Length: 201
Image (cartoon, rainbow, N blue to C red):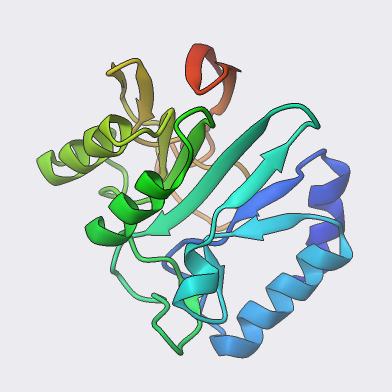
């Protein structure tokens, strides 16, 4: 419901990724409605848009003196944007490489990746390899959503990879015991480097 955007804003959430497999469930009109609701609540968005270029653009977060790039990508399940088609930014390896290579080396980058096997806390070899590559290409942290359960994590080349945050707020009924569990992740940066992190249940 568009009305929930103002509640999200009052929680102190300043930006959201729209890169997921359901962002086009209500077609282009649904995406437009979502974007308008976020804009009216003063919430920035990234990871989806009217075309591939818009969907693939990062959110540039700044506190005045420091910047951070945040990208959102989604697995090729459905809802994927194309050159002249709205949708989510695809987790296309070439696109991810170009995105991370385009950023200055002194600016941190966080990737929110909508990928993984539902209700399973461990990454597939494909997902682990791709997340590790993103860190090697300059991402400070790669955080995966989509599994609907809290996943495993690892540090790799001084970067953080989390293979599932679980659900934050999801009122869809489920008998899965992990459905109502989730993590916030606090990340502290020192320039482009990960200084520390902690999980907040």
